[in-house]
Image (cartoon, rainbow, N blue to C red):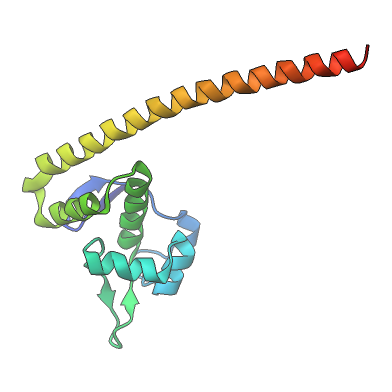
Length: 154
């Protein structure tokens, strides 16, 4: 899905909530409780993201109520994926700052995401090793359980 990041430049990003749950662009003014329901994030977390600079561009209604857009939902989906990578919050905030700073930060963004990818690949390798140990143990106990069961039936 191609969307605009905060710079207005077309970019690829993670998809937000399923399109069926979204309003058409232009009519996409979601309250914080609606965004919480759509994303699974708490209102407290959404306010915190805004406070630390992950979501500093949230529009407000004439009464000061937050109004999120489909673009904000896309951004939250990306932040959610970054969280799953284990990226530190400080790095996520730095990434958001770089996006807001403009196209001249592509190199820094690339480096930040590349480092995160390397960390994820390292964790995947570690988890694959852990999975192999679990598989061996499960196989051992499965074989041992069958052997015990056959001895009891003799």
